[in-house]
Amino acid sequence: MNFGFTDEQLALAATVRDVLRAHCPPAALRSERRPAWEQLAALGFFGLLAPPESDGLGLGLADVLPALEETGRACLPGPVVETAVVAPYLLPDNPKLASGALCVAVLPPGQAYAPDADLADLLLVARDGGWRLVARESVRLVPRTGPDPCRPAFEVAFDESEELGGPVERVLRRAAVATAAQLIGVARELLAVTVAYARVRTQFGAAIGSFQAVKHQLADAAVAVEFAAPLVHRAALSVDRGVPGIDRDVSAAKAAAGEAAVLAARVALQVHGAIGYTEELDLRFWLARAWSLSAAYGTTAAHRERVRTALLGGDLRRWP
Image: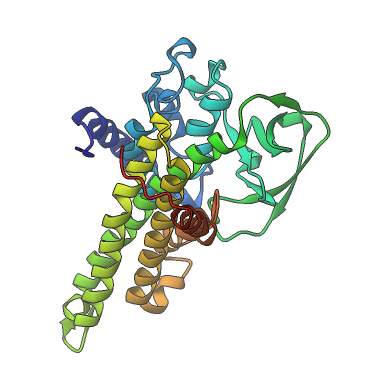
């Protein structure tokens, strides 16, 4: 079976990459909360998964994986997955989504804080096995300290909400796979930046990239990314088609992508040395994003446990 992306899917990703390079440079991460959002909205990015009757394109999750990966590569701030992936599934009749006029944040089950809740026009809260829709004017937010300066977290309280249909687990699957795609993009960017640094940084009269120890670290991270990426694609296809073993596929993808991104972050920090911690180096934004997204929509440990339980329970089915 061919798991490769189509020319149209890759072209969409290339267009998103160009927009993000022009409007979401590293300097924008220091001064803007939602750089490039207007340009992505004009491109139709937030309506890719929305149904055609709401002015969207009605694409599947697998179709937009390369584009989501580019948002991770650019470390795009804001509730990207929540607005572009979760909201079209829970709010399919809202035409404001496709136009980019609506920003949505999510408070998943078992999570204390909602990232980017201060930017949201609507908040989706998982409660009692279902979803509650909360308007901005009904929400009370308390800022909390988090690892990612471009993804601030907030404690949420509200008095009024509206009950929504749709099971929680189906939404969380989509969010987990989309977040895994972003993690792949984060990891690829961390590797690219670190390899470039290793080529020009010298010690003992030679580039540190020529040292075997550094080569092995970078190779291990690269292998982890290349092994994780197909798992994310498979999980997206499973979500789109509703095949048996879907939870196992989603958890395998999120765990592998999280581990790959965290490994790439650790290698990047080790190769850069003490400079990697500094405020002045843009690397810190991608380090923080790897750490924060690896814990979003289920930690790596939690997803590994789900995979282990599925395999020990006899779920050894292969695609399709």
